[in-house]
Length: 303
Image (cartoon, rainbow, N blue to C red; front, side, top):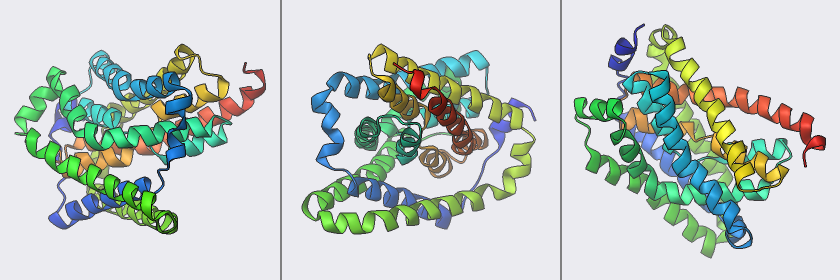
């Protein structure tokens, strides 16, 4: 399949599926917010350089690198858009788990995840538009599909910010309730999202498989570059070995589930972009596992 043909694939989802996808994101953001506690932001006070430097690597440096990589690889516009959407999404709890397995600094990882989640609730929709507009191929693609920027910002901000505020309020004033319901809600939201995504893309798998090289190669290179950027940022910020591992996973592991939802429900189901986001979500478990194995083997030799 040619890049041009891939750009023309549209994964259409019915209104009920769109509603379920939106509900799954609201549920997951609510569950994340229920788990946010003041101690999650300890690094903001004890080591502001590491905190703000880590967020800068995720929120600014990663999308900039993504645009440069998309241009260097010469990927199609829809694939580039998928890469940008992934880079603009926050990290997630997967990065915390991988940090733990790699003997990294879990407290630092959780602090960055908490910070990026709060910022992302308000910044992600603007970030996707901003980074897409400064890269001509994706900017032109958004014009072709007559993308409603204002509507996207309003809908996505409400979908991300409202449950975050509600969840943080309950966590603050009713912590026992928050602790009791956050786990089941996270599972419910994750299962709903996964089920709808599989249902929505099932019919398009043969088409996407025929374009695997156009999708998987950029995803693998993009993910490797993100890991390298996270590790480099850790060195630049003079973090210790455990903190460098944490930042490697925080930058290298993005919330691909959110990216898929935004591609399917807010960005016209552009096939190349949705395939990139979905492939990233699968691929980073393999690449993350390899990074965990590497870190565990080199732990004793780290300074």
